[in-house]
Amino acid sequence: MTNSKKAKRFQFWINVVLILITLSIVLPFVLVFISSLTDENTLIRNGYSFFPEKFSFYAYSYIIRQGEKILRAYGITVFVTIVGTAANIAMSALLAYPLSVKKLPYRRAITFFVFFTMLFNGGLVPTYLMYVNYLHIKNTIWALIVPGFLLSANNVLMIRSYFNTSIPDALFEAAKIDGAGHMKIFTSITLPLGKPILVTMGLFSALGYWNDWTNGLYYLSGNEGQKLYSIQNLLNQMITDIQYLASGKVTGNIGAEVAKLPTTSIRMAIAFIAMLPLFIIYPFLQKYFAEGITLGAVKG
Amino acid sequence: MKKAEVKKGKKKNVLKEYWPLYLMMLPALLYLLINNYIPMAGMVIAFKKLNFAKGIWASPWAGLKNFKFLFASKDAWIITRNTLLYNVAFILVNMVVGIAIAILITEVRNTKLKKIYQSAILLPFLMSMVILSYIVYALLSAENGLVNNSILPLFHIDPIQWYQKPKYWPAVLIIANCWKGIGYGCLIYIASLIGIDPSFYEAARLDGASKWQEITKITLPSLVPTIITLLLLSIGRIFYSDFGLFYQVPMNSGVLFPTTNVIDTYVYRALIEQGNISMSSAAGVYQSLVGFCVVMLSNWIVRRVDKDQALF
Image 1 (cartoon, helix red, strand yellow):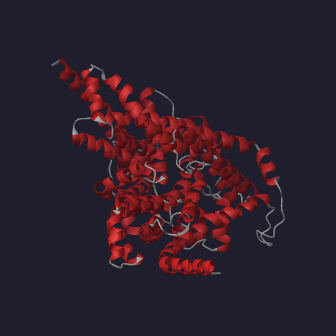
Image 2 (cartoon, chains in turn brown, cyan):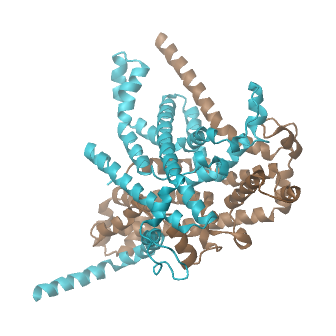
Image 3 (cartoon, chains in turn cyan, yellow):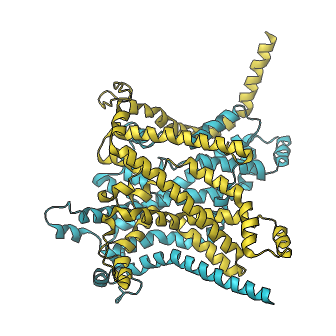
């Protein structure tokens, strides 16, 4: 009797603690959302707040009416995410399958070639100089797709170990006896049976592309580059502008400079629409995210 | 003579049998060659006096001059110290908080609530550093921030110029990093907690063990392999930091550099904002080489302790 009472009390308290933790995670997002719906004057007077005096849809109607720049950036993010993820998955699967064929000559050497990129890298400077001076990637759409994100050695090795451990060898043997070649085995056995891991890794690749702003920061500049800004780059630029103005380095007519900046509520509205797709897909894909993460800790 | 012919024939057969596989790997291997291996070779620029007119290879050698300049500056010490101390703090805080939350969540009996907690905790992991910087800005902005406008007045504290005061940033960055990354570790700990044999707990309960004893005598020891794996992964990266966290979240504010500048942000600023290739490449090579030694060393230590836990 006392034991079950004790257990009940224990349950009560851990739930209280966890609800507080959950709130501390969710409330910042709520703050961004409410701020995007707050009347501009209220915002300037009272700051960002959970309980604004006056609401307004101004920020969203502004984005829809004249947010050409914003919609464009959104389009670029979607494009880069789709193309980049498709290329990433195709290349990863095509590399992982041969590495899973145990009889392949030089398999160990090639695996090491892939694995070594996880241990050592040349760093930003040579990478930057190569992409800019030799591959002339600056201010092109490739700048957002190619550097860094097209292939992850870690993901390739995880896909390979999935192919090795989760697809029964007997299937391959049977296919070989039936006279199937490597291509046939890849398309009719490995790909269909490897779908779970490919979806999971694809999801992480897509997340990487959707959230990336560093490539835009490195490889896009000037008016030409701004046309290719993804939604994250646009957000990044706006926050840099605020900091620039706050630093007091601006001379001349500050009023005009400030007037050019999207207002406080619009900034939060853009941040919110950048998060929105993630909120929408999250409930459906959470399982895959969780699987991908726990897979990462189990080495292959 | 005959033997060689047989060998040759074998080789031909090998190529005949496996060429589709080599062809399949070609795009990805080419990409790794360009994206990863050419920049590795490009690290020589740190030892050169770069002259763009002559090109990278024809530029005259500078020996270790670039490194001498780098280590003569005060920055070299500051960025090394910041990178290491922040990483140590991140590793410790995220481990303790992650394990604590993971244990709490697995103790919850109500499956619906359990699911909600698990979903919520991973949510910040999905967001970009830019989004995180907006959230921090909404909280800490001097004029519009929630903290200055609504929270500090409750305690009769004057508004604080957060983005001008370096002393607050170690705490801000540790909390922000924990908030964003905690779900990742937590999920891994939960996965290995689920794997613990329930009969251990039943036996402990029969012996009259308290909850606290269950945690310290069964749960934590069972987590040790997972803790070591995660620890090894993060120690291997101890010379690297998340560029976005240190560049974007403090909004590149120059006043804050004493407590926010790390090797990654230093390399970026020296390269892009100052165009100083010799300093930035020297710092980059310094990071790559020491980083590599750290990975090898930590893996070597783990191999000696428990071979199964080693990465390679």
